[in-house]
Image 1 (cartoon, rainbow, N blue to C red):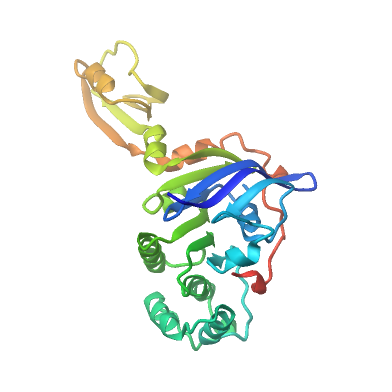
Image 2 (tube, rainbow, N blue to C red):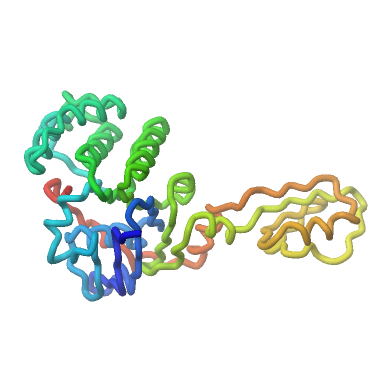
Length: 313
């Protein structure tokens, strides 16, 4: 597969604060790629480096083989971008936004925009001043998607959206990816991207702590296990593979990593009343990456750093 995004040892600091450090990423064309981490982990910094809004201290960042700083204008021709701090002119209507984006790109986007606006249930005659937060987010999504870009970079795209609109956005992104577009988006909620992404990267303090296909990440997450023992049961040994074991009377629960069979074999001669083995808990795995992260103020995206509406590609 051709490469849509590649970074090599990419570094960006804000004085004493680390934005990203030695970041190596590879996103293939046509992928749906989730960049995950809590607020301040470096997600927005990464995106702004790819967009050419920031200059890296060192390292390489390329989109479609083009240098993200020197060839930013060429990259933006194939790009749709939704910033995490979306700000639009208060006087602008959706229809006026389509006219502006169409003029910049040399395209008539009114009909596509009308169809997309209907799908998102967005009134294109309403000005931004009169819109709710969720409606403004819908307009930002519409302007990012309407010209059918080759690459979509979306920073926390579901912010302010109701569940129905979130589902419709996911459908749109799946359709675009099926048509060959590359989707690169950030989130701080792993479950949000679980049913959407092919691959997930997790940032912690601006550093990459995981980068793997979602099914492999799921396999490493482990299963939650609860065992309810019959009253008066006399137990021998400990359940194999069960970590973080908690015992409250007749109820034992813990995290199972590895195959289920050894646990079942161990339980078979035992007198237990109930057994529950749940699917891998990805959110718990995600949180374990940050269990010791008590000094988050020392890293990540710089507070207050914002882009103007004209920066939206």
